[in-house]
Length: 345
Length: 222
Image (cartoon, rainbow over all chains, first blue to last red):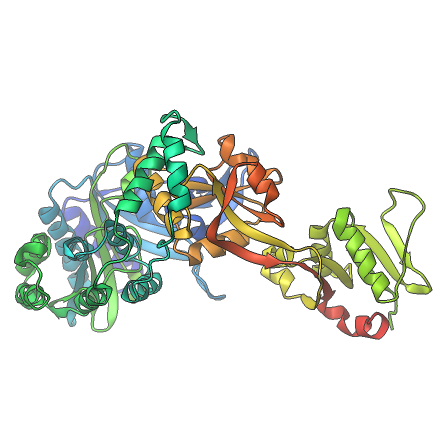
């Protein structure tokens, strides 16, 4: 089939599953994207300077562009998109143009139902084109968070691991540090303690470089009370590493997690939040659960998946509950979505 | 064969005086124009060497575009410049003046922030509580970016500054800064403190040579 024909077949499936076309802007304010994606992303964008000094960029990604359009109330919440996104991705011969075809549920009210809807829609459209050896690989960042929160270590370490889960190399560094029990924050606080009491006497609402005195003192206090060295960093690293090695059929996951908890003397119920994944058994499909998964994109917060036909990845997606808020929404707007990889079809 | 070379020297302050002294120590006496504000100079008994006094940053640019054959400038300015430029410039000799460090500094009153790890936490705090990024004012965007990202700080935004960067946190233009400092006095006097592991680059003055001028320099100069 020609690629245009292919897209038509896929779009038809999207529509019949209730997804409505979203047509986001091609040009976006690049400050807005940097605010969301960070300075490192700057070199990936295709930008130009407008006469008034504003830097604009071609939309680097249709999920982000669709979210922006949704926040401007220009689209409904259950959408599909079909179009081009523009970004550089290393390498000299790299292609700037990515054809993207995908679906999103923005403002997802029912996590289990919506995760299922996205995966089943993607799966059925994929199957219309490639039937051979379909396999789904899934991970769940929520599970990792449950594990970390159940471990006996200082709060600050927990947050660090969760924040940096999507950056595997830095994550490894953190593990090494924990293993050797060398928290670089372990410095003496005596001199600062003196300043702490001085500052306590000041106006607590006074703001220094964007932070109030009370905010600064509160964090200082928390920091000295949080134990900086603790007994068994090694043991905890071992648990985290062995969790990340879990790789099994979805049908065996229940048992594997129970087994894992038992072996490591963890409470049985720490993984109670993976109903969304278990619900996928209904798909009647080969599904592999891989704990060490979905670690290349910062914005995923829950389930992450890829659909393979043989060795080729033909679609991927996941849940991203924080993205819309980071794009300026006043409150958290949960969302889940996926895109077809046209190049591999 | 071309046998005239052009050397760029810093046009101001101690860096200028030290650069002239360095040449004198090599037996090369620099003669400046009698007109006080003239930017050109010569070397005594060396008619084939032309001296131009330029801004230290300009010296890197002009070495890169081939206008200058050699020049004295800071390592910080070389490392900050574009990769394409750096490829065209060779480090010839480390000099014993112009010592300065590029550092990360925070308001002294932020007593809870002593290390980069603290900074990383505060940046995430700001991000999740206020939905904005920690703003870092700097004259060195490239070096700052590479450093912060390598240390796990990702939730920030750069604010480019041309001067008096030390004031930024106190006038609402940024929260923290990175800047060059030799004694730390300017930072201290402006109520800023260097983070314990906040050293980005140790810099001094260097003699740089344009790659394409390597042979002519070794023939004529040293």
